[in-house]
Image (cartoon, rainbow over all chains, first blue to last red; front, top):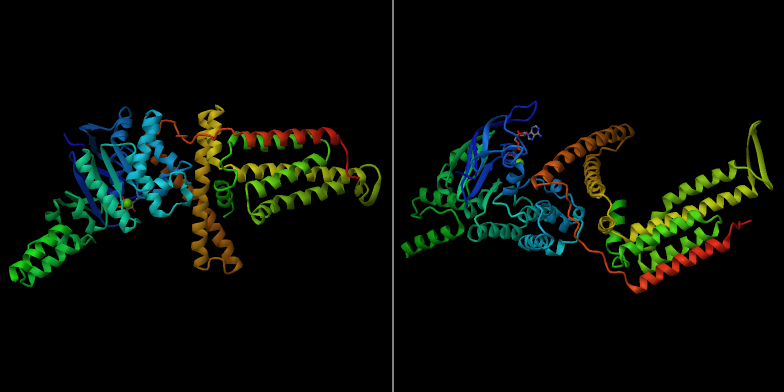
Length: 277
Length: 262
Ligand SMILES: Nc1ncnc2c1ncn2[C@@H]1O[C@H](COP(=O)(O)OP(=O)(O)OP(=O)(O)O)[C@@H](O)[C@H]1O
Ligand SMILES: [Mg+2]
C-alpha cells in the first residue's frame, strides 16, 4: 500500500482544457520525491489533489489505499500537509506565531503541545525572531518560511511543498534542504516537492517525476532521469551542472565517472586527477 | 500606507506593555464621558489629556498624530460650520434671508451648539486615536476572547483584519504597475486605468478569498483560531492613572454642568 497513489488522474479547470491528463503517481513511505516541470505543467494542480482540495474529473486518488471521502478528508489533511506556491494566501492569522499555531489548534491539541510545536517549527525554519510580527510586513522569503513552518507544526506524515525554494536566499535554501534530509533520519516523513531548479534535485530527491502539459513524461531515479538530456530539453528543463559538465568531458575523452551531487562530483574529479598524476 | 502606519505605531508605542483592558477602559470611558457631558469643556479636557498621553506616554511622533487628526478634523469643521449657520436661536448676530422660508443665521445658541459638537468630535477622536495608537489589533483579539465574545465574531474580525492588508497590497501593487507603465499620464488614461484597477482588485480579492478557504481547509480548519498571547498583568501605576483620569474627567463633567462658551 502506497501513501499516495493516483490512477489515471485527469483534471480540467471549468471551461478550459485539460490541466492534468492521465497521471499515475506513487509516493511510497519515507521517500523524497521531486516533481519537475516547466511553467504550467500542472504541478500545483496535481498537488491540490493530494489533500482533497480538488476532486479528479476522472480517475482516482488513493491515500493510504483509500479514496478521499467527506468522512475521511480531515484525516487526510492531518496526514498530508501542503504548502502552496503563493505564501501570501496561506498566512491568514494576525501574527506569525498565531498563524503557525493555527493547524495544531484545529487538530485539538492542548495548549502546551501547541506551544511546543510552534517553537519547534519556528526554530526549524530559523524564524523565532519573527514570532510576534504581523505577516503583512514580512518579505517574500520570510512569508514562505512562515508558510512552511505552519505545515511542519502539524507534523504530517507526508509533507508536500510547492516550489519551496523559490524566493529563499542561499542560506534559506541550504537550511531547508538540510531539514528535508534530516527528516529522513529523524522521522519517517515523506516529502514531495516541485521545483524548476534542477540543480537542487540530486541533493535531496531519491525519485523524480517530470511533467509536461499535464502528463508525466519521465520518471525514475536521479541517474535515470538526468541521463535523458534531450527529453528534458524538449520540456523546457535543464540538466544539473555536474552531470552536464561530466558528460561533456567524457565526450572529449576524459575519463571521469558520472556524478550528480556535489560530493559525488568531487569524488569523481579527485579520482580522475589521481589517475592522471 | 495609512493603515499600515497605524498598526506600525501601535506595535512599538510606549504603552504597548500596559494591560489591554486598561487601555480600552481609558478610551471607552473617555468616549462615554464625552457623550454624557452637556458642556463643551469636558470633551476638550479629555482631548487634551489623551493627546498628552499619546504624545508623551506612548511617544507617538507629533507629526503623524497631527496627520491622523487632520482629515476628520476637516470634516468636523465643515459640519460645525453648517450647524452654526443653519440652526437658529436667540441673540441673533447675523442673518441672511435667502428664501422666504429659509435663512442662514449666526446666533449665540448656534455658536454654542457648534462649539459643543466640535469639542465632542475632538474628544471622541482622541479617544479612538488613543486606542488605535497604543493597542495592536492582536491584543484586542486576545482581550475579546477573555471577554467571552463569541468565537465566530473574533474569527471574522481576524480574517477581515488580515484580508484588508491583502487587498491593500493588491491594490498598491496593481497601482504601482500601472504608474510604472504610465497608466495615469493623461486624464483619459487615468479614468481607464482607475477602472481597470477596480476591476482587477475585485477579481484578485475574489481569488484571494478562494485561496484563503483552500489554505484554511488544508490545515484542518474546524472553526478554531489560535489566540495565544497572554494579556499583561494589571500594574499599579497604570491602574491608578486610569482611575485618576476617569474620576477627574467625571468631576469635570459634573462641575461644568451645561456651561457654554458665550
Ligand atoms: N484557476 C485556474 N483556472 C483555469 N486554469 C488554470 C487555473 N490554474 C491553473 N490553470 C491552468 O492549468 C495549467 C496547470 O497549471 P499549474 O498551476 O498546475 O502549473 P504549474 O506546473 O504549477 O506551473 P508553475 O511552475 O508556473 O507553478 C496551466 O495551463 C494553467 O494555465
Ligand atoms: Mg505551480
